[in-house]
Image (cartoon, rainbow, N blue to C red):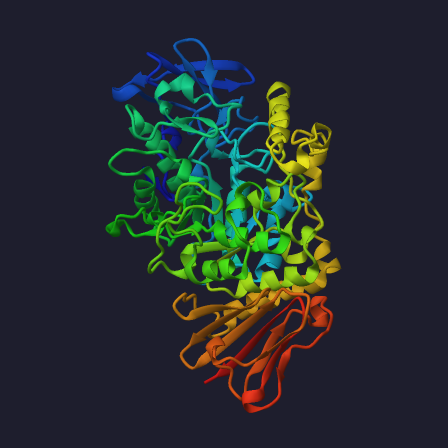
Length: 623
């Protein structure tokens, strides 16, 4: 059905001229009633049973703001699986929301393009002291000034408690009430569009949380034991009754894009979306989601298998997404800088050559066996664009899945962190920043939850147990020092102190200048892997040469402890005998650097390139 806001789902509660129309899939029940709750008590209104277990009907006189549940066969009453808002959390009643009541002002907003995209990932609850959608609006001008083009919100679907990462959501259509009401999320998105910023949302279709998950009461067919995930039984996307389960995910994607005017989605852990049917859920979702809105939207996948099918067009047998979280770059850089090779880092050598492969090809693993043994991983990268590979130095997983939530700049020195930042932001791939990395935030980002006590205790024990296999945590007493996810203090330690933008002004300025170069420089603005060459010129030095016609840019990334002094090698981009200019050096004092100078020394064939220790320097010239 459509109205002034565009497409919205047939299922759930939809306000109409004659009341509110309710529609729910509940094949487990022979009789379904809408229980309307108010201060005077609860009134029950029967729905008509239709085909395939769908129950539907209109309740006259019920409008926006009404609280309701579905009572099944005269027994338990449960929230709506398509609830637009759960003001009292996942165990309380659903609230009727009229999407047409919000007055959008973004009619001229065209949407986002993959070209030029710079993503800023944030957790709504930990980004600001207030931890709300409304408070985040106040940070949008500063994010615009930083130079990012899209804000990515970690999942906001309703789950238990008042603090959560969002990946245990159970009410997929209902914004987390601790962050604010639906209209406040819409106000955030509308404000972002007025500033020229897009908004992406992280969504989870591979599993649902256990606390407040009432789907089995409506239909056993929501889940299947034919497939398994790390979180339990898989959602049933390919067995009997799967049409309605597929529609739950697809409708949710369309809902966020159409009803909330979001500019795109990041689909969590798509390698755990199991579908053996003729058309994979991801392929159907991309087509139907794009059709829900006239604006340009972007769809990304977190795909741990390095499967390029995810980002290949539908007509070429792919799933048609715009990009994939390409973790090989992060892992190679992290191992190189820290020497850590436990867990999933064990598959990486952490060499400059490995980093160079990621920069030129997108993936390191493209079908070869994992280092140290294991089955082959990945598929061959061919002509996939650089924009389809999302690179990062930090994200919620890579920071929050560490025992103490340390960020990269907490474990490496400032000089090498600045070099890695330059490499990320001047590479042709799509960069993602995790909130606070641009000003070297002192806050950790820890795993935090707010479950009921019994489940919460299991989560705490499980969290600490995850690290039992790591040599550093072999001692059970040491594992007890890992912050308790259930403790409010763990969440408080993860909240940013935005005053550090001023306190750490040097690194913050470096990020702004790097992003300005990426946006405005005629060579760097072009995301072209073919016109990018990366060479290893020393045990800790990389050179990245990018060109566009006669214009050339050369980034020398010297992670080493000694000054780089090398003869000019034409293979590194053919620095001219004269005319090359220094565009940026991370050692500049206004970036908090040492002040050591980078440049070219000597004349003619004897000219030598000088880059200080732990420094990145960008040179430019015209041929």
